Length: 286
Image 1: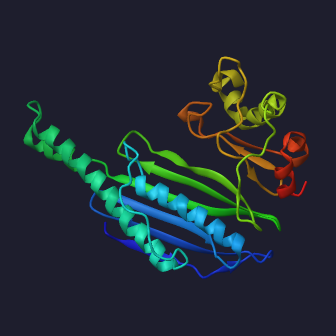
Image 2 (image 1 turned 135 degrees about the vertical axis):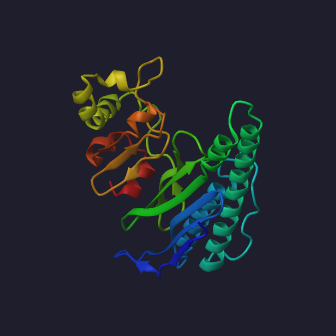
């Protein structure tokens, strides 16, 4: 406990001239553990500066709320220069860990109070159960996962554990940015594409569930929790451009049970091209 690992990596450049920097942090307090593994663009161009601001906003929203029941901030936004990486990261690491510790301690104190009020447990059992109170954990992960001469793709997937049976995945998911403007590409598909894309979505789901289906003797419908119309929805997260095509990632519970994980599959650009918006095609170089 109270051990820390902090590393601010030197800037790295891709073969497209796009520069990034990374930070790794892992520290525990009495009741909580915060990890941070983040990569941000260096603001060497106007587009990169806009992109960096957006990703700092993502980091701020993730760490200042964590799991705030009422949606309120747990600490103020960083007011310094977001290009001062040491000051920026240090602020969110310290504030994030303090906020997580406060929530975890409140939970531990409430649980201990309830245990001590028990009339069926011995003193030894009470102390044992209090000592076994799980801590809280939060991991903020932001990685650059793909890049072309037109776009940079970052993936935001966070892990949160609040003392339950298991943790959960949160975050923004894949985020695609136009390098020149720094603007985020949020809409990929023409309105109504979900219906004609059903054969492709079904093919992708079959590829993900194939081994599970063979092992359990089950069907795809037995794994999916679909709407009344029976359609496989497009994922709530935007697709992730890769070298091989668009990767679709469904969040926990979005279309299946927790035990089946987060279904994902990749469709080639030739397969998805007929359904893409013109601006998406342009950014993807199609």
